Amino acid sequence: MFRSRAMMYLVLFALHLFIGLSVIGDLGLTPAAQLPFWALLLLSFVLVPLGFRSRDMQSRLLAWAALIAMGVFSSLAVFSLLRGLVVALASLIGQPLDAAWRVGSAWAVLGLVLLVALRSVYNARRTARVKEVEVALPSLPSGLDGLRIVQLSDLHIGPTIKAGYLQRIVDRVNGLDADLVAITGDLVDGSVAELQHEFLPLQGLKARLGTYAITGNHEYYSGAEAWVRAWRDQGLTVLLDEHRVLQHQGTPFVLAGITDYSAPLYVPSHRSDAAAAFAGTPEGLFRLLLAHQPRSAPKAEAAGADLQLSGHTHGGQFWPWMHFVRLQQPWVAGIHRLGRLTVYISRGTGYWGPPLRFGAPSEITLIRLRRG
Picture 1: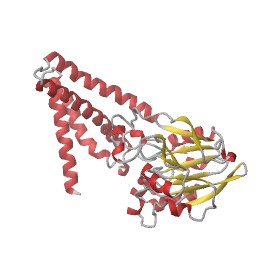
Picture 2: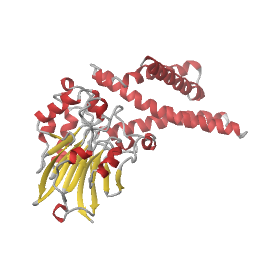
Picture 3: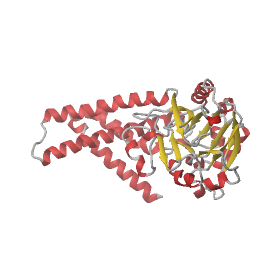
Picture 4: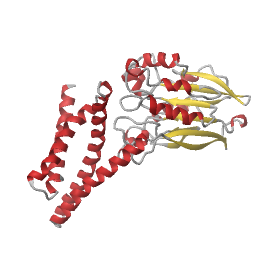
């Protein structure tokens, strides 16, 4: 633990120093005029590590400051490294860039970071928009054609997402006249004691067939078993490697849910087992599975699922991190196929960590099932 933390601080120090020398040093300012920029960079170095512990902070203001610093530093580091790469390549090919370019590009980096940060905060904090998706399924019985599922995922109620934000989501969902509401994990970021009043608006969700939830990886960071009890007390049906047989327009189908892919590392009885979730279901029924992480798909397909609804990726949340999601997950967002299985991955209804979204908008997903 100490070694990994020391490495994190070393990397952060190196990146902050690089930004200071390569960008602030090229602004064309006197040393005295550079001091406010260096002070902000020092503040960033102090705040960024605090962002990783924001869910444990008592001060909401400090949590906000630390998380915004994380996001701004991410963009600043990326743009500074890209600029540094251009400078290095120009030198390597014998075409060093003149002073005017270096000054102009240094100011451009700061301007871009500011614009991206402002837009990203707006994108994250506005109420998620409804994204309508039609999913064509050859195995869908005719009686289920047109079934309307609202998917919520990755709300991350916690340091910066509170009851007011959640109430706006609930109000928007209730205006969609859904047959079923599915919450595909990472609902909270914190303990029941800290957040029990913040998730109460979920009691108001309305759907003809009910509201069903599964655990995501973040529930296991703050007491998943306690959260499952709290959700059930509030009227949510939580599926832990189990299923329910529901009916739509007289046609039965199976809705199953599995615990998070990583759940057995925290709670051994939470096996994340698609085969167990479908065990004992009647033969021939359409099978819908809620699975937080897309990488559960191979086992879902082997267990005979027809459709898997997932989240976890946030669609990358903000540029350029969507390009790195594939290092851990098979897909980033949208509709994908694996054998007989169709997978839909939400970009998430909230956000994790920095209250920023850029290039990966949040969504309340209204899914209509279609036969075909």
